[in-house]
Length: 528
Image (cartoon, rainbow, N blue to C red; front, top):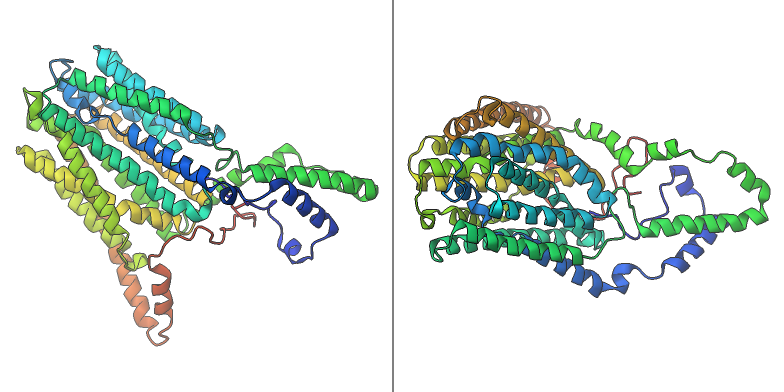
């Protein structure tokens, strides 16, 4: 989600926009136009296309870890010989704590260092994870494995935002689809490959970990070969902007020789670094986040992102332990984790695709749709926590993931469609961080050995209660919104025009990359 290379020289006030260009402005434009040359995308189309293809290939290869679906069975097998209580209450909680601690530094370093170094760190962490799974035998080593797994998860933000630094804004939607598809295809391939190795290859978990180590080592090599972007979202705005500022300085130095008095008066009070920092886009957007919370639609979907994603990832972290308890296996070939993960990934991709074609009046029905889907997820969690049939448990998990992934693109659209790409990235980052804090609190209370230390079945009953509470809240809000809507519709029925305008403003439509930038609190634009 990088900045457009053709960005202007900066924000101007309304009064300045109405003035005719001065001779100084023309001098600056002449210097800039001479130094910039043709647009980068127009001059080098093959270069950015090649970079996007290489990055998608990198995303696909780094997603192939055949042993990932079998980490929990590996820890509980005779090869590692950890107890279910150790895995549930001492090893798995470290992942969430690590993710919470590393997430904010990873988000900032991704932009500050321009993506590539963070992707290399992710690759190194992947290698360490599988080395520890191969060679580690102690509880502390497995906790370190989960710590590095948290680093890997936090560094994923670098891949999701890297690709936008390679192309112009008009191509953002297309390349985002490419990058997400490559990841989903990689996860699907990884799960199928792992299941085939276990079921038909008759290989041990140790060998599967070695194969995974080979894939992640190749992914680390690819990350070193990635091109290093020249720009990023916040701290490295764009190389064209730097050239323009240099050109302005050069033009002003020439004008100073012609009008020394004017230049002396204009340079008498240069802006201090503190005021420049306060006027920066990043700080202004931090201030603008307060206004986002005041918009009902953005507030609803942001809260959904925080609370429902928390429950979703808690289920993902502990469902493999649940499967092992429901159906303890003595032979590796009877473990079907890879096949179930492949099926859930396929259904998730299908529901995400279907969500793009759903067109309803979201300002009226959002709470009801969220409430109904959350209720279905609560029922599936109750089924998973009480059934003794492993196949019922598998099916409930696949449907649970599918329901969540159906709402993800809708939430993404509802949040992103009315924000600039910079403010959108900041809002998603804050939502993710708040969700991670909530996950850590729940795990510390219910899962961690230092808290209640519940077994996995009891934890799933807690998740059922959690989703049930969310369901009640969503449905109550839905009833209030719907009643208010139809009451206003009856009162304004005589006018007839207001409802049509409301329908037009809430229909889903593609996000326009070059839409007008949203004004910040200080009157400037986020698209500096």
